[in-house]
Length: 100
Image (spheres, rainbow, N blue to C red):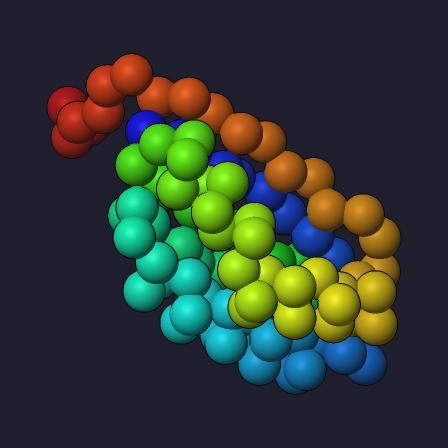
């Protein structure tokens, strides 16, 4: 399984548009084959800080995701929304289970 986790700051004046773009991206991506989870969330204390969490069956599913039309639309919208570059990390997970 591939896990992608990251954070990004959006411009304060673009926050509402960023939420709309993120919701559209998540809705389209969650329908993709191989997508286990895809979500954005907002920080509880910093309104311009957003987090991304993705889970993919394998590298092929992630590669196909990057080639989708909704990814191209999403990437085209980002320059007008972001206050800086995102911080994103890719994890390759060999096992996962409940904590405890």
